[in-house]
Amino acid sequence: MKLTRQTRLFFDASVLVAGSHSLTGASSLILRACQMGGFRACASIAVLKEAETNIKEDLPHSTLLRYYSLLAEISWEIEPLPSKEAVECCHGVVAAKDAHVIASAVACLAEYLLTLDKKHLLKESVGGALLQLIIVSPGEFIQNYYHFHDEYPASLSPTREGKP
Image 1: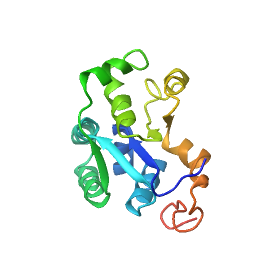
Image 2: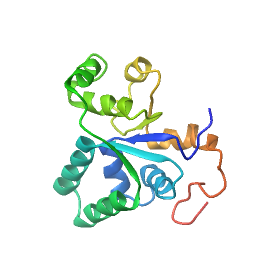
Image 3: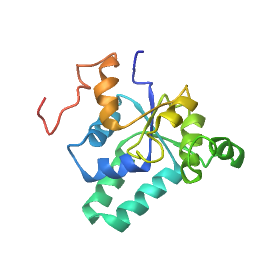
Image 4: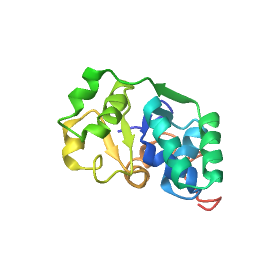
């Protein structure tokens, strides 16, 4: 399993919120790697709107500004809203409210879906049902997959505020 700059990572809203709020967490580290062109960052219109709404409702204005900065500084592949049929296909796999996330990640041909949603998305039953899509938390991605990148540990080595 080799990762390259062409590897598609689909970001759930929870990861975008966490990465916008904390500069040192795993979510932020992966977003930073995408800023550097280390991966192809993917999201859907619905996920981006959900992240923005959650930030506006629950977090300081500085987090919203960082979120907007991440949107501008990363070359995103934005998936339009999935078809009703695509979403319905995911209803048996995941809770109806999250079916659009799975449908969008599959539609954009993402290899990984990054999420912090332990209740609905980070369940073995969900990952096992979609064999072409690996569903992991940002921390799990860094720990279990990041080192497979063909440029690791060179310029894409994750650091926390300049510390290796």
